[in-house]
Structure formats: structure tokens, C-alpha cells
Image 1 (tube, helix red, strand yellow):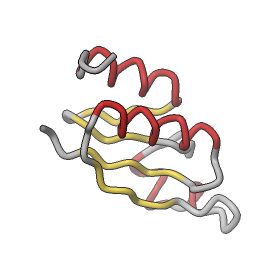
Image 2: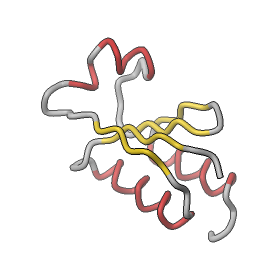
Image 3: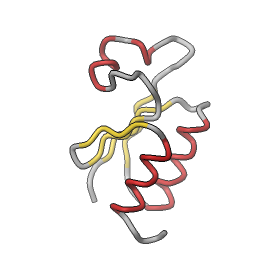
Length: 83
């Protein structure tokens, strides 16, 4: 199983959806919090990874995916079981 890295904020509903999907699919992941209240999503370091500055962002299989529904769709295609 590939190592995934989830950049998220604990109070983000979009991030919450992705965490649910990762857990349902049984994908192990490392969580890297991005504090939106402190503006970490606008830092040069984070913007180098994700020019849009959005959370969540999932790094998996050599891809950097943003937008929770796109991430969930990728997970469902990549890991079809369980649906």
C-alpha cells in the first residue's frame, strides 16, 4: 500500500470527508496539519507544494491532488474495494 500524505486542517469539512474516505478504504496516511487560522496555507513552503493554497491536499502515487471530491474519486478508482 502506498504511503499517502494528507495536508489538512482539523476543522475543515472538506478535509474531514477525505479522512473518512481514507479510513474506509484502509489507506494508511501521514497527516500534516495546515493551520488555516494562522494562514499557513499561504506560506511559501506550502504554496511550493500546492500553488492554489487549498486544503485538503493529498500526496499519493506521485500525484498532488486537491479538492475533496476529486481526491475521493481518485481513491475510489485506485482502491475499488471496499466501495
